[in-house]
Length: 325
Image 1 (cartoon, rainbow, N blue to C red):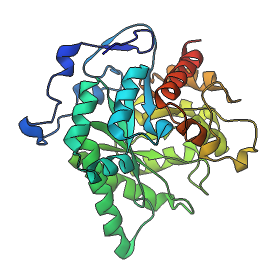
Image 2: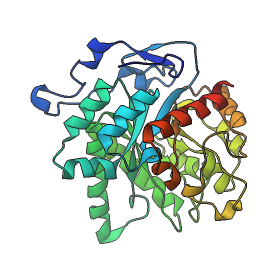
Image 3: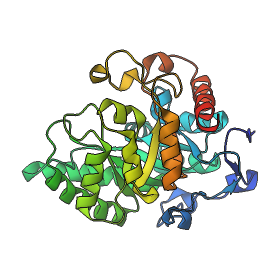
Image 4: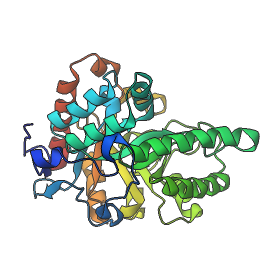
């Protein structure tokens, strides 16, 4: 495996580490009890296992696998490392597709470890926020199934999405605390996500309110410049957060057209190709002490039709141009 030291602030220890059995994986591919890496619980220690800290960049470059969506999950993991990323976010629909084709969670965990990557999050949980009554059990059983998957593949967090319509903040906060307690019992931390195009829970401020009302020390939010813009909130609200309250910072940009209120996921563009002040957001992250993952997240069908390795490489080049330029 060839690693370009200029693209990743962490360098793998080498072939020996790549051949070590993944943590939490027993002999024969059986899942053992998963112990979290101690550095993950220290918000000021961002170094993941199997990597040396260098001084080249102050964030960890991650690839959200939605960016190269049509590719099978094991190939996505390979591409992320070949392109120079330190981490990859995985989607549960990809995990389920791999299982449906006869694969296993152990396959995924082994691939991640052999490539020397981290899995900051898996995506996503739905229905947990708003569902009550008889339907709650089914939604929460599915959330639990996905959280077990997240823990099995070595994820730190699993992203918990908001409702598309009305958001009862008090109810959602109670449910978020329950979700955190369930997730922690399974070995993963649900992270509260806001979406700029939903009716109500569409700003940093509202997501933080859910976390604060939940009153759980493991509560976190997911940040995303596209959603900050699309929801009409202020990037300056990043300053309200502590670094340990940020699960991950999704990285992308937004075009000037169509108008803000008409934009959706497919309108996102590479960082630096839009009009958002990404450097200001990055500086706010630095000021509060966040030094973890920034993850390229795009949903463009034109990119899905291109060579996925080239898409990932171009994305990393554009990320670095904004972050380090």
